[in-house]
Length: 258
Image 1 (cartoon, helix red, strand yellow):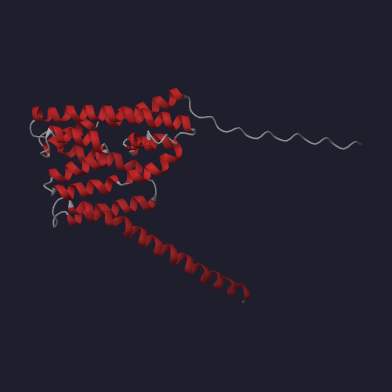
Image 2 (spheres, rainbow, N blue to C red):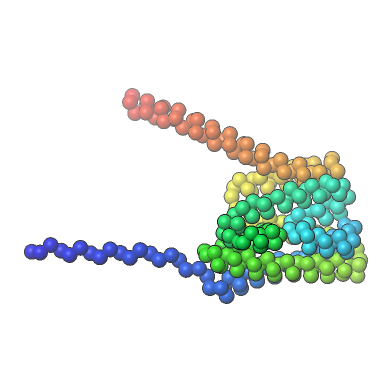
């Protein structure tokens, strides 16, 4: 009988298509609107911490990184030294530089646009951008999220700061809790691995332990020591496991040989 004809080669799988532009825009708008409205809480709490309307609006216009802004006004409201509060906000905002390294590879923007785009490199724009499967979708997601969030955040900051006087004592309304509540809401989704959760837990314990004995703002700075401490302990644990493994293997072999 004649030899069987070779079966045709299976076609190579085509790459997964990216989201339609409309879907990317919808998702980006949802994130921008949801987070942008929390600028009202920042405006109110910043006014309660003693900042002027001009200072509050300048923070949102030129700093534009929600967690750092909340950390700054939270430390000031607690009576912390302005330099200590600014240092804590600065170190918290350093994470955006690492986001920028990743986004620069995904977006590949022209050099002239990069300084402007860098101002929008925050948690939310990074999350929307890295979730896209194509460069076009990444650029759309980054631009729509950044523009929506920047405009809304600054508008609601202005409204909150101007309305703080009408509200009177923010503590009576419970708005003094808005700063830590929004900060935790921004932070919680970022704690995905065990190391991140353990680091956050150690940082909280450090801050709560040092809060009664140190000036306001200092416990927040010292709680950053949680990261190197946890990484050091995890590294030692990993080295101990690797060192113990050959010994266990030798013992197991010895047992089989016997």
